Length: 273
Ligand code: DGL
Image 1: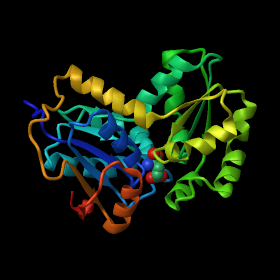
Image 2: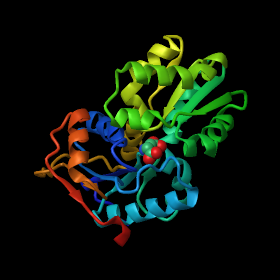
Image 3: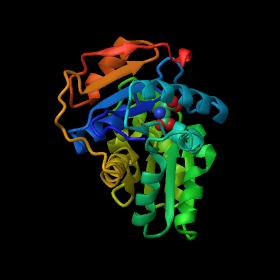
């Protein structure tokens, strides 16, 4: 199959969180076009089963294929943990998740080989970081901690708030006691409270942002496959946003975190896919 290098990149997430990944793609691959899908009707993914997340991911991928994307980034950590392996072999275009890029950097950065992972109940429960990190380096010990309250706090906009700080202190205490030196921010929303997490964990712990690392990995992958955009085909909307519910709410959150003015957000019926 001949892939059009000037086609957009498909990026999807359970809702707004994956915009942290889209933002890094915009910054690091400014010539690329993006079709973003946020599954705002069925969020959260973090507390749902593997089977459900695979079904949702397949539906979204069918929608993105209809948009003729050249590659797909599963921006959601939970969907990457549960669905990447299942869908990768079903597609002819490159598919990238956000787990491996973060884990690779953590394996490289840790000195004491004690790595923490925070994420949703689904991501942490899947044990995927541990599997991956131990394959890279069997001496690494992984300590996971689900932090489900971080997602609603971020969506409420409480990014620099004493309540968020207190919640972080309670969640992260046990990772501090484990003396980790590297912490993977294994959920789309967590880069937005990075400074709070930094304050709690201290300067001595390296924070890995999978959103950023995934954008770099995407750049490597597109370069390797000769799929980087030529940047010649200009479009009125280089970034298009689709959601399964509440398009206006999505748009205002997107405008608060993206370096781009989101004008168009369209609701689609994802159950039709
Ligand atoms: N996007 C999800 C993740 O990165 C967090 C929100 C959710 O639970 O759907 O795991």
